[in-house]
Image (cartoon, rainbow, N blue to C red; front, side, top):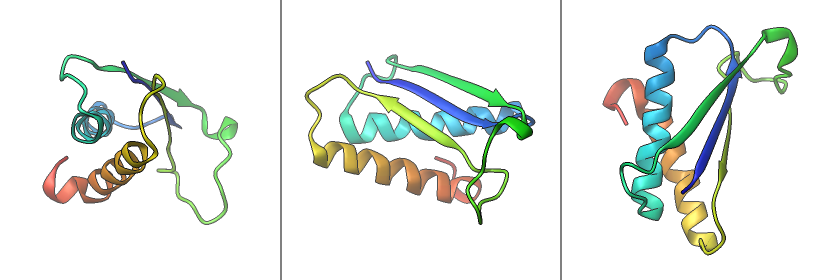
Length: 96
């Protein structure tokens, strides 16, 4: 049961947030083989003045934290990060 927390600046549309969570979930399905129903995700929206963005990043900067129970290999974790990143990069053109 992975637990997902996403921090982002307030103001994104419901569609944007749903797509973000869908991309993360699909990465979890593919990389570590969770069940489709195993979806424990939350978005935390933060006021712009309370969210420090690294230099050179846009207001779309997002922090994704995934808590996994012990037993996942380094390779699985690496694959998970890569899959989620690729899905988010490709998103508006191809979907997750």
